[in-house]
Image (cartoon, rainbow, N blue to C red):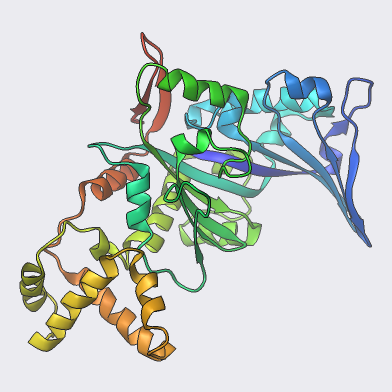
Amino acid sequence: MIDTVILTIERDKFRSLLGNNIPQWELHSKRKGYSKVVRNQNSYQKKDGIYRPRIRGITRGRTKFMQIEFSIPKLILGNNLEEVTETDFKNVIDTLRQRLVDLGIVISNKELREASVSSFHPSKNIILKEGYTSSYIIKELNKINLTKKLDLNKDSFRNEGQSLQCYSNSHSLVIYDKMQDLIKHEKRAIDKDQTSNQLSLFDELSAERKPDEVLRLEVRLSRKVKMNQILKKLGYKTGPTFEDIFKKDICQKIVQHYWETIIENENLFLFGIEKTPKKLLSDILSEVEPVKAKQAIYLVGLSVLCKEKDGIRDLRNVVSGSISNRGWYRIATDIKSLNHIKSAQKDPWFIHIEKTLKNFGHLRVRDGPEKELVEITNK
């Protein structure tokens, strides 16, 4: 449902303790009219295996506040392969308050519930079915066309095909192989804050059999302005509190919005069951209007080229030296017309992702003779 969140607390709403066993504030950065201090875990806390939030104190002019950054599922479950639900909110607040005390910060449950949200990451872990792998799906998704507002970043490390990032400074959609990411080195992993519990969970799941393939979709609303824009667009109030955003429907609609906007709307034809060129030509002639035979044959070739290798962006790179930007935009318009073929059948993996996002259940590990990762559908 939701993973990382950054809460902002005004200085007069918490107390900062001092003591021999309490981490102290350390200066991180300073410039005219601005300073940032941080409180990190002490040497004993780093070894006890307990997940604690990151905290920083910021002074901007006369304004002083604290930011608390943490992964919600890691806080109460010890990992973010499993997912939280709305019913976990009280446990999250109680646990967060206690972990802050460990770091010398005293704050009430009420202030935490009503804390201002500066950033949060709605997400969904999807157990793949029918033999599909995360790497295969990411390879297919890499064929999409993106607007210039977002960049496409393929994982440049050795294990290609394990992540796809559509990002800008203010927001991003990250899609990656969650199970493989668990065993990557911190510098190579998408999730750079692996816990010992998370790593041991992977060992337990894979001890007796091959672990499930899990594809992770994560929307990162990194800037408050963008977060508010998205909330307003989807019909929710801006300037939310922690309690406001800890809702299934908000997280679900945001993830669905990014999936539909970036992946589905202009790229759906890429993820249809393959047809022979002649069958595709017949469908175009009967379903794309108005179109003449010569144009229909051109669209068949365009469809084949878009589905090859790295897809639409790769096609643009091939022709970039031969046409102007205006010429490419005319081709891009023709590409969009391929989505009008109503007889196209979606690939089973695409249908499964759509269904999972519609149900928006939560993953949990079920104990038994063998630990098993299961999807629990919310009622």
